Image (cartoon, rainbow, N blue to C red):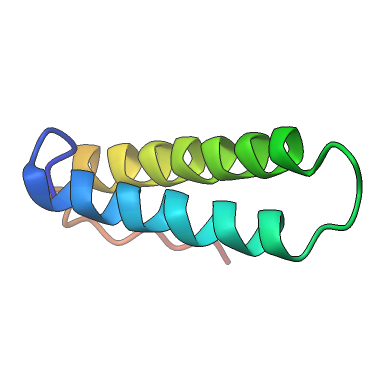
Length: 67
């Protein structure tokens, strides 16, 4: 999956919405908006880093034996 594609943007948007709503609805604290935004942004950043790593190593067919 290319990070610059529309498919990735859709997955990132869905990830942001799910994380934001889970944290906003389920948090009774006074700062629930800030916590929900930070968690959702951190989730999308983690998704981006993971997809960048997979995209960067997609043509590496060597077997890495870590035993």
